Image 1 (cartoon, rainbow, N blue to C red):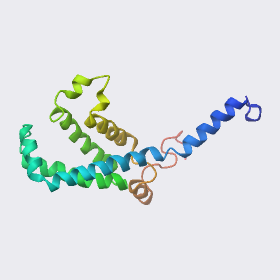
Image 2: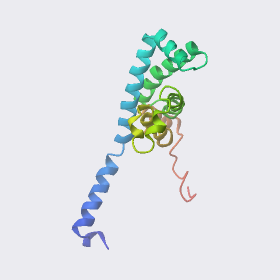
Image 3: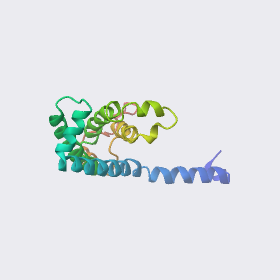
Length: 167
């Protein structure tokens, strides 16, 4: 059916698709802002109370608890900031994903397995892990330092890179 002879449902659907396409930049941006801010403040809290964090890691049986407390706290503090601005998004999302897997296996214990599958999103570590994995695969989005740097370096979305092969 030609566009001029479309019915009201097709016009509404087309309008809805145009609006959601125009707003698609918000998904990675808001995800980065919320998750990044949460990690930054969590990392700050852990660094401010490093002795308590070390004791907690030791109680979980995590090897080298002091070193790991410093590493994880710093990763969350710095990684959160980098996620907020969209710099090194995939790298920091991958590193923080590893941290969430460790959290699921240690501090959350079997809680996440007991809630599977009905209430698994009640476990914060699992929910964060899902968002982080999404950022690893989807990327930072168009409003990010990663995108700005990739344009400056002329890497990434190159014309003809994924099309028919014609230049």
